[in-house]
Amino acid sequence: MVERSLDWLKQAKRDLENAEYEIKGGFFECACFLAQQASEKAVKAVFQKIGVEAFGHSVASLIKKLSEHFNLDPELIRFAKELDKAYIPTRYPNAHPEGAPYELYTREEAERLVEYGKKIVGFCEVLLSKI
Image 1 (cartoon, rainbow, N blue to C red):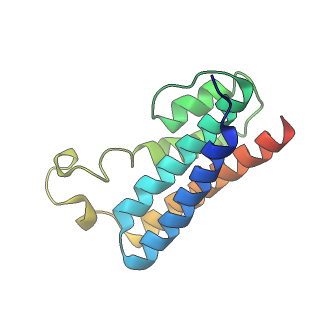
Image 2 (spheres, rainbow, N blue to C red):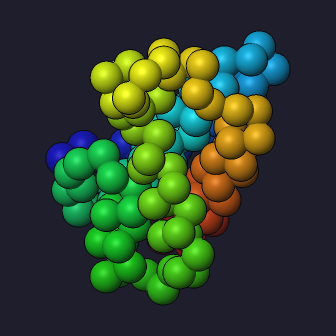
């Protein structure tokens, strides 16, 4: 496996920048999804760096697996669980009883999830600098 942790981390940070841009435009569902994606990519960057294959899209599951290798703040798992809820429902109308996803997400929710994403990405960035 080619080690590309820096590429994963750079894209994670870019996704967070895009999430903030989406909030400014009122695309709250997109911002929520991008926060989840940024977190997933940042955690996968750490796995890349240590040479461990990481599968799946659940940030909470990935962080739990990461805790087998590093001491982690348990709050990160709480953040990740909330971010995981934005993986599918932010994109697909049939994930909700009614309404298009863009009608169901709020600025406050998007801002909160982006903050959670920043915490996870920031944690991974610091961790990568120490490996």
